[in-house]
Structures are given as C-alpha cells and as structure tokens.
Image (tube, rainbow, N blue to C red; front, side, top):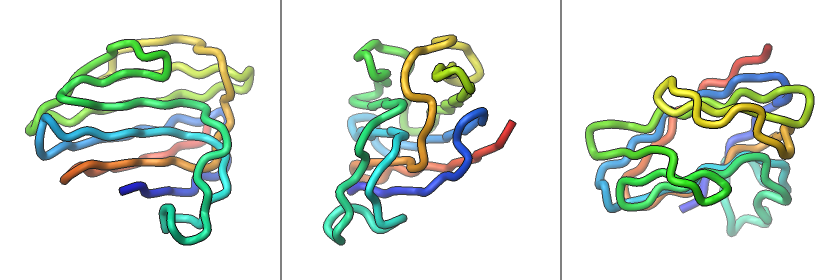
Length: 132
C-alpha cells in the first residue's frame, strides 16, 4: 500500500525518517520527489504518484538499498532504520543511516514536495522535517 505525505520548502532542509518493519522479510520503498498526488490518499483516487524522484530507498529481506542499487544498511524486527536526508541548495544531498554518513554531495534533484512510502505487511514510517 502506498502513502504520500506533502512536504513544503524541501530545499536546504533535513528530513529524518524512522522506518520500522514488523517482519524482516517484509519490505518498503521510500522516495521523495515532485508529484501529482492527492495528499495522503495514495493511488486509486485520481492521483498518479511521483513524477520525478529526488531520492529513493528500498528495503527487502532485512537489507536497505539506495537509488543506485547499492547495499547501504539493514534492519530487523526490533531495530528500525533511521535515515536522514540533508538537502542542499546546489542540487545535491547527503544521507545518513543510523547517524553514519553514507553518501555526501550526491548529485540529483534536491527538491521534493512529496514523500512516497510503500509498505508491505506491518511497516511504519515516522517523519521529522526541519528547514535550514
């Protein structure tokens, strides 16, 4: 099931995510981008989803992968993934997993106005968004 959260003022910001998964074989997809979305309603209500993606992460069978397909971390039932995206004004971003820098000045679209979270089984997402 896909969920969307609108986020305003996304450039020069820090967005922290805490992803909890009830079953390690369950997975998730987390993305940020611009879109044509009816906020919080998901697909099936006239929304089409993200039009382009600034960042993308997926989780499967306890492993976390970034948008390039690289393995960048892991999770289990009692250990959530803490992901922090630091957007910069020069079309780059950095991201941290569990307070460890994984990629610095990653090129790409640094602007996003929606968060897309696709969950499987009993996954959950907490978002904390701060402007710089």
